[in-house]
Length: 100
Image (cartoon, rainbow, N blue to C red):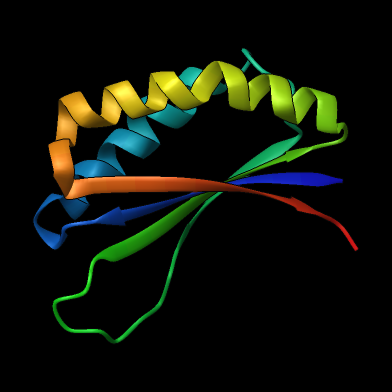
């Protein structure tokens, strides 16, 4: 099993709008288009006052080939869409994990 993790650092003033966009637009747009087995949206619990709010979207794949295909198709599109919607108030990076 492989997990594609996308971490988002958000300015607190866009947090509610970003969560709405992610739940109502981004994640639904992916359903049925790609071959991930499941997905989950997570929030990092942290106490840092004035620190960015951090969220993660995780997508589970059976095959690294399918994960890589998804990543290549989605990464640039996601970057462009986030920049248009949220500018520099939302940054992201991605990681690939493998079940040990």
